[in-house]
Image (cartoon, rainbow, N blue to C red; front, side, top):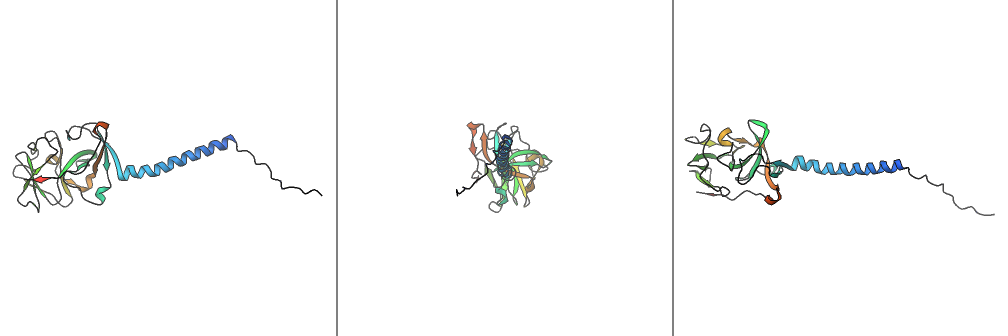
Length: 209
């Protein structure tokens, strides 16, 4: 008697529709994975901003594309000289770019075109040497009810004194006063565009006179 071999029924070929659905599903998986990686980076770690205006010239110019580090200040406080993107205290929907000059607990005075800092290291006050400015004598008070003249501004533990590098054309803490820590978005980490100005940023080292 002849023995019969095993018999397998032929499998139906996948239709063209099934191939399309598999392609769409694979494509969606790639998109979902990309979004899962990009969105946290975009909204919680690094964020792009474009410079608008001339208040930070000559160091930052209108139209330059910056990457903002939003994570560092969860572990440390801003340092003197760092450039921050901040929410304008009088309208938090607006964003400004300014430089940190006065730190929490310090006192700030403006005299003879210079910034003077009073702190534990300089209880009698010391003039800040700002190496990133081409002219060291152009910091004049705007609103003398805040700082300037006989007024010395005292910063609390969550307050900062901010200035634009273009001291003759900047709206900053000389106009609207202190910046609260809650209004800090992040520090300028990278200038990406235009490519000819590509640069990484860190806080400059300061000397006092």
